Amino acid sequence: MKIKIWGCRGSLATPGSATLRYGGNTTCLEIRDGGGRLVVVDAGSGARDLGKAILADPSVSEITLVLTHSHWDHLAGFPFFSPVYLPQYTISICGGPNAQQSLQKYLTRQMEPPFFPVAFHLLKARFKFDCHEPSGSAECHARLVGDLGSLRCHSIPLNHPNGGYGFKFTEQGRTFVFLTDNELDYEHQEGVPRSEYVEFCRGADLLIHDSQYTAEEYQITRGWGHTTYGDACDLAVEAGVKRLGLFHHDPDRTDDQLDQQVVWCRQRILSAGGGLEVFACAEGMTVEV
Image 1 (cartoon, rainbow, N blue to C red):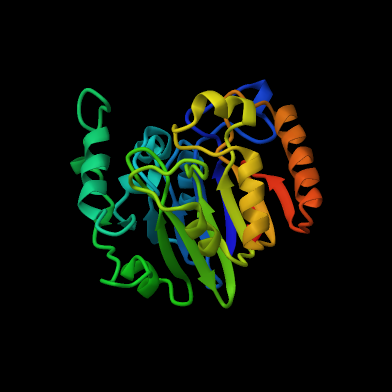
Image 2 (image 1 turned 30 degrees about the vertical axis):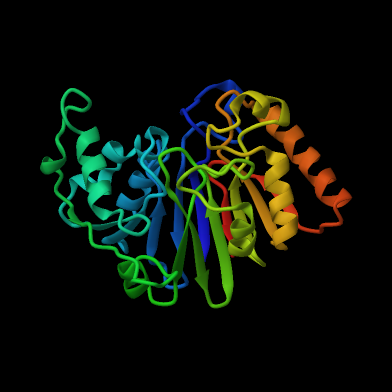
């Protein structure tokens, strides 16, 4: 599978000269399976550019949109995602277990007056809010699994205020885990213990994990739902993942500071005896798993 990053900034879109290399758009990923079928993860401000790219690709008529949670920075791009306005597209909206009714409500609500001038019912795409997790199973999104053939998806609750879900995508023995907005050093009511994230990530070929804060910032922000980049490195080493992408960059983090963060993380991993590759996610980056 191929993963392209259309937005990796956290909390707030931050265009400007200090974020040119890593990008200022908020969370949006494109996943293509071996057959070229399309899954979109989250609809942050990066979804606007992804939508334009989809319009230029005549092979795409069906899109599965997987949402981790409904905070603003992960939904802000949905009203600007061009395919929702065109009748030739079918869009399946998926979340974690039992999330379908709430996702429809949140997407509709953000387009109601006075928040947006175009109401949800005016969108022309065909929407399906019918992805479900089989009872008693760890496998999520029956439609995602059925429609995308070899691609499989599993979910895990995030440690984040108001909840949410992280996802593991597998295809032909390769595994990609996406855990944005996940706080490893604080257990929220909706979350699970750190040990469960270690097992969820065990042996992953690629882990992209929230790494918003420095250790100093975390003294103030503990409980806000995000992780230090040091804790993200420690999780990756303990879980034995092969590559770690640092994600959900703080809106105040400059490109140069992210460069320094990567150097620090590489040194920490080496000192822990790990051999995994670590990089900071950047807008426009494509990673093959």
